[in-house]
Length: 449
Length: 71
Image (cartoon, rainbow over all chains, first blue to last red; front, side):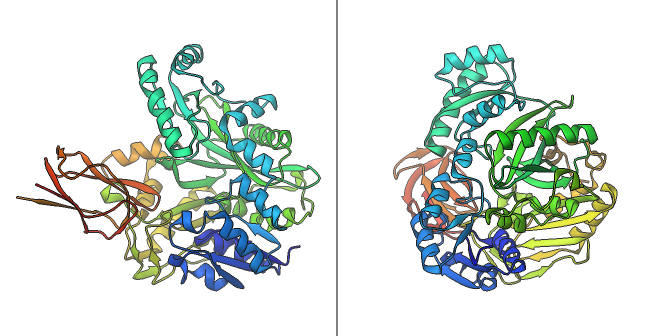
């Protein structure tokens, strides 16, 4: 096992990784920007290194400064968390270059899955279903011909993209011709690479993802699915496991496809395969996240596996401590992402100082928070304040616990999306498990009450 | 009569979309702020001419700070 792990992140996920380090008897090193000097993750670490000014590009995204922090702290491994540099193959390689272990997959796997067109091709070769679509398009005529072949509606996507940025849905050829220029321009400005490709748009689809884990010996297992259909602006809001739309045979098919995908690219450590699940139960590979997911706690609470400790063990060269047949998915877990944003003002971010804070408590509630009473919520980073995670023997029980958890949470000083969670949890469609990716957008358009 | 256009949120100035002397219409985007990884456009509340720009790209602004003055 490692002696000292540097956590190249902040907020709730930095605290989560430091907890796992403590449990394994490993020292934790925090890094922090000026805005985060008083943050809980800095206090909770065994060592802390200042890495510069508040904007992320001057601190948490600054490779040279982070490499210097790794050297000066004597860390022998680096956990990148999620976001920031977690899916940056060059950084992963540079970490190895200064003699530390990257707690994640090989840089080549990060690079292969980071380029969405390459990822699609590799998955096709591995026999994993992908949405009918194209490779990178050469020009608008190429796009029009391909769309005619695939059939409308289609989605234009940036090859270097992610997070929904640069995606343009097109219902017909006129929209495609107009959309091609804007998708290319957006891809160029956001990712420095204007390459775009086309995919069939699946109406009424759900977002279902499968957790995988792989060891150094090339053994791969899956830890079942998570339902992540509830999203706003391509940002997940509420996740649950298991998915109400997935039964035994479908779960087995999804799991087998995810394992096949990971094996095909020589994957190591933890990863997540994202699939679109159509109303007809067909599923298609969307992308692979080559890192720990925000919503990993719902898998932990339905499998009993501590995923972050598992990441450390796998990175240290230990074999998977279980076989596929030893893994079980039991009970039901729901994660509510608490964002500092104002639902009354079209979800405008809501920076400020937290003047009063109370979290729910109990054996079946887990709060992974990045803030505490008195914390300053600054405009520099993403608006995630905390994750409220609940569990129950059944989905109904978990929903009831989630409503109790929302009612017991008190946050003053910043606006939050807690009222949106209450609405979702009380909505008949959600309670019946009838969601698709467009569900939350449509719910928000309906008048409340 | 002049109109002061304020930041509706604390954040930083990502882009300034107008220049002094420019004529703008109601709803035109004057400035784009960035806060919590979101782009937030600041629109002209009325039509008019830009007579003053009080911020620079990259600057931090507090909610309520005057960004642009229209006439």
